[in-house]
Image (cartoon, rainbow, N blue to C red; front, side, top):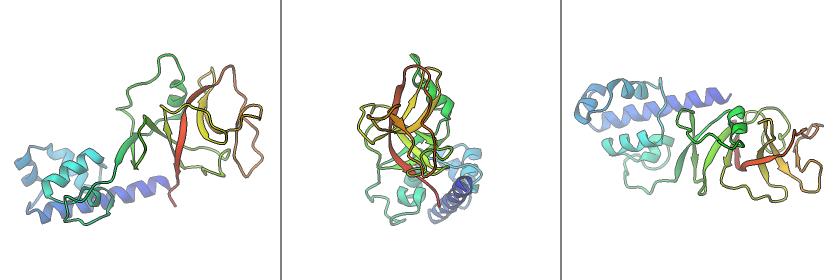
Amino acid sequence: MLKDQEQFEREERAKRLVMARKNAGFAGPKAIVDRLGWNVNVYKAHESGRNGFGIADAKKYARAFKVNPNWLQFGTGNALDPDELPVSVADVPKISWVSAGQLSEQAPITDFSEFPTVAALDLPDGEWIALEVEGNSMNKISPPGSIIFVNLRDKRLAPNALYVVADETGAATYKRYRPNDDPPFQPASYEDVPPPQFQGAVTIVGRVRRSIIEM
């Protein structure tokens, strides 16, 4: 379901890019890349919907075609108002659970440039990663397939708050903090899911501040 939604959004974004280019008076991709020096293959892949493009490219294209970057990227706002106040958008790296567990190590991952990204609106200040939820252990809050956004800078524990944590083996999990329970990181499920069995000390990877699911 999530992949179908991503493909649909990529194709719709590509259609808006074609519309913006034509309305700006450029007959085809070659005309615009010759004028501005862009990579023709990269641009064609964006315009065909074969590859998606992120916030940085959306802003670049919006400036060139004099359209609203919010409209180009998300289909919102007035397409012909390039000066409309932009929303705060971040391209958040979507990493694997194995990689998330490695963030608890003494020499954690610091370069997320090779990971795919998920666009997120109006996240507070922080250092963010995204993870796709697997299983039913948190389905009261995040059904399987949900995308959670984790602030790596927020490790303060608060009762009933949500965290990604990892034990000494590097196994990472997403749970609710219940300080009076044993262990203090517990499922939030409609099913009878047992709590995790941690090996050794538990490290806070970060606090989960947002969970989204495509319908």
